[in-house]
Length: 458
Image (cartoon, rainbow, N blue to C red):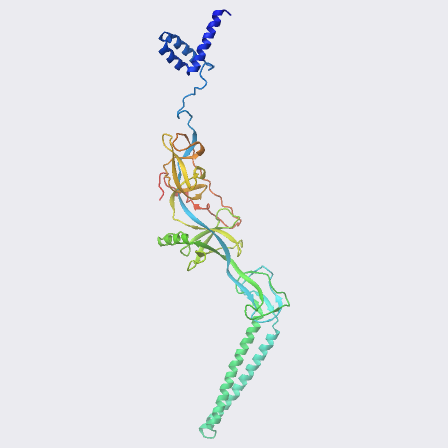
């Protein structure tokens, strides 16, 4: 290679280093034009060569491509408008089942147990024989009482004849009035003795009938606490023998306690003529066992206490529930929900679109120009996987539903529209006879009742 070529190559390399040092072809062209006007044409040619360099070996390494967001690419986030649907809020409580009727079976008379007529735990019908006691002592007492009654009746007949015979004798002054009065008094004493004997007979008959113990109503019986041949005692509850118990479980009662704030709310709804709450008899409630999803069973309020409990500040309410399948038993727990509001149009968004800042909740909104803003919101219950927003958001707002970590107030983002999808909660019941049900928290009416997307919350 000749010396001229080497010198030219070195000059080009020096120019390239200088161009890189000053900040690129455009900067080098400006400097060359201002400092040496005679080199302008050569600088323009060199700049064109550098710009056409596809390898970028002569371009400055620190020069970055211009962007739309002041030096960085706009982040992409998923945005959507909130759903607006009519909903009904529900309040949930914990309830306990109890039998509609429950009785302890005890005996009216003491004696030996000679026979048991049921199997432990079976269903019994009103009037079914449960126990039989040894009735022989009571039969003898009944025979004696009947004999005393016959004796008293005979004496009444005898004294009656004496009185009838003496009446004309007194009129003819043959019998003194004193003797006649004695006969009349004897008649009255005999008549009183008859009444006493009749009462003894009835008492003896009652004792005999009490040796057979029957079911007072239909229901499920417990186990027998005494075996055949055992002595059972009558008398006061503390001293008498408990034989067994019988409960009625169809229908069955469900008791639950309502806190004071909710009770006031239910009273307000009742005064306004609404069907929500438990402040009126006949209100509907929904319930589920711990292993059930949703609320597949129904009940009706049939009792509300007359005052709040001073210790707990709650009002006791009771619902009556059908139990034909026998699934529910006294003492079992259940989840209960009560309609807590009238139907209203609610703004609903997914939970992942909600941010947390210490004690406040907020959502990020996106304006038409892509600018991100922030709105503080008040949360409500869940419905089909979506969160009800009570305050702070309207149906026309566009919010960030995914990518909150890439957006912050005051910057611009590229929004990618994504629909909000509700996930209805399925009702799964352990009771094959139970039917229906809605999602926990609030109920969503049928789609036919859906308002326009621009409808506002009441």
